[in-house]
Length: 181
Image 1 (cartoon, rainbow, N blue to C red):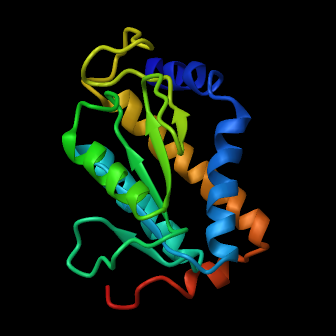
Image 2 (tube, rainbow, N blue to C red):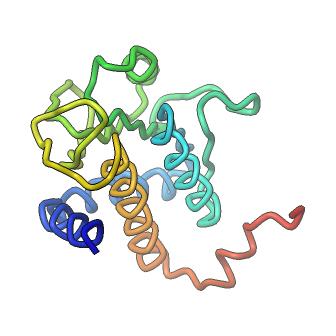
Image 3 (cartoon, helix red, strand yellow):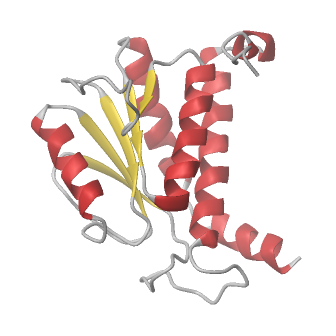
């Protein structure tokens, strides 16, 4: 029960505007028939891949950076990256964000630290990461699990909001699920 209590407290600190920022960015991409790219390292990367799968189920053109079928990012596409410990910690995340900006793409960064970068939409997830940060709190969860679990639930909440916004039914979503399993 400690984990549930800990997560409830954490979610009470995430403003509704954080969800709205991401929903708005994704809706614009869908409406303009552009592409979404996702990138994260480690367990954050796994969470982003799961989010990408759900975006695909919603009929959104989605690619995971690093897959052999990832197309080039172009002007007005969107890349969503996560760097829990904070910008500058993972040089690949910084490099990918800069490359996307150079190509005039939109960038959304999810992080557990305060961060400002021109032309980057920052969504702060005030959770504990593996390395201490300004939101550090004691956690019963090991290492960066609090951030990763919060990220997963945050993304699933965004998916539910998008389902409502697009007026999709579960059967419409399931049409995009693989049939090769």
